[in-house]
Amino acid sequence: MKTLDDLIAEGVADRFVLLRTDFNVPMDGFTITDDGRIRAALPTITRLAAAGAKVLVMAHLGRPKETHPLGRDPVMTLTAVAGRLGQLLDQRVQLAKDVVGDSAHDIAAGLESGGVALLANVRCEPRETGTASERDALATELAELVPGGAFVSDGFGVVHREQASVYEIARKLPAYGGDLVARETEVLRRLTGDPARPYVVILGGSKVSDKLAVLTNLLPKVDTLLVGGAMCFTFLAAQGHDVGGSKLESDQVDTCRELLTKYADTLVLPSDVVVASEFSADADTRTVPVTEIPDGWMGLDVGPETVATFGARLADAATVFWNGPMGVFEMAPFAAGTTGVAEAVADSPAFSVIGGGDSASAIRAAGLDEGRFGHISTGGGASLEFLEGKELPGIAVLEEA
Image (cartoon, rainbow, N blue to C red):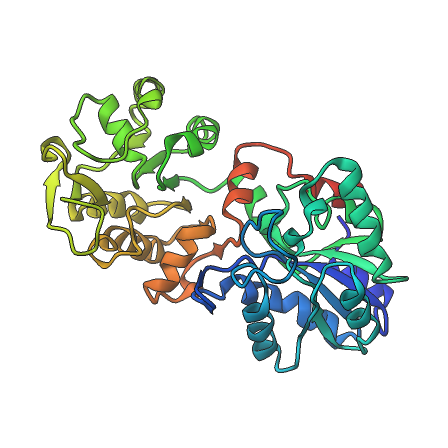
C-alpha cells in the first residue's frame, strides 16, 4: 500500500487530508477511561499537521441506533474525544455537529494549514453501515468535504469493516495507509509468517464461539496455546469437570473435546480458578482447583497456580500473542489473573503482541510500562480476523489503490 511517507513526499501543505481513525474509547459516562486509541493516532496526525495539511478526522464511538438523532445522543457524541485530542495536540480541535452536513462543510472550509478538526460520530450516519449503494453515496459526500484532498486510513480497529469511511472512501480519493495501520499490518504479518519459536498464544475472553476461528487457525501453527477467561470453562466441561455456575457454551463442548484430543500437547488449561457466589465485586470468593468448583458458584478468574504455569511457558517463549483477559479484571477481586499474566508477558524475552481491546486496557489498568511489550494493537477484532487468515477489506482496498 502507499504510506504516509509517500503522501508527505508528494506534498500536503495547504491540502486537505481526510483521516479515518479509531477513537472508539471506553467511557464512564462522559469520561474517557482509556485514551490509548487516541494516543496511538497522534504520530500520524502530528506528522500531517507539521507538514501543513488540513486534517479532517473521521471516527466513531459506540454503536448508535438509527433512532438516535445525529449528534444529540450524549453517549455517542465525540465531545470528550475532541477535547482530549485537543489536549494531546495542544491545539483546539473543532467538532462538527454532523458528518456531511452544513456544519461539516463549514468546519472543513475553515481549516487552516496544520489545523485539525473532527467530524461527528460517523456511525450516527446510517449510510456508514448501509447497503453498498448507500455507503458509496456517503463516501462521495465525504470526498466532497475535502476537494483535491487525500484519504489516510489509520483506524486499524475498523479495517475489518466494509464501511463507507473505511472502504468506499478509499476508492473516491488517493488512498494511503497511516503509520498505525502500516505498523499493525507489519506486526501481524510477522506473526503469520515465520515467527521465532517457541510461539505461545494466550486467548481469554468470554466465549469459545467468538474465538473458534482463530483457535482452529492457530493451533496447527503454535507451540503452546494457553486458555483463560470464561471460555476456559467450556474446555473444562469438555474434560468432564463440573463447572458450577460458570459461563458455559453447551453447544461448543463437543468442539472443545475434539480440539483437546487433537492438540493435547498444545492446549494448556487452568488448574485453579477464583470462584464467587455471585457476579459481584462484593461476593464471597475462594480459590479452588478446577476439579472442585462448588455447585452454583461461578469462576471469574484464573488462580495463582495457573498464573505460575502460564508464566513458566512464557518465560521460554520467543514470540507471544495475547488476546482476551483471564477474568473479570474490571472487578478488583478478579483482576489478579489478568495482571499476573500481563506481568509474565512483560517479563518474557519474547517479541510480544497484545491483541487490543480488553487486553490493552488491562495492561494500562495494571500500570505496566507499555514499552515492555513489543506491540500493543488498537484493534482486537481486526487482529483476530487477520490471524484467522481473513482478508481485511480496509487493507485490501489500500493495496488495490
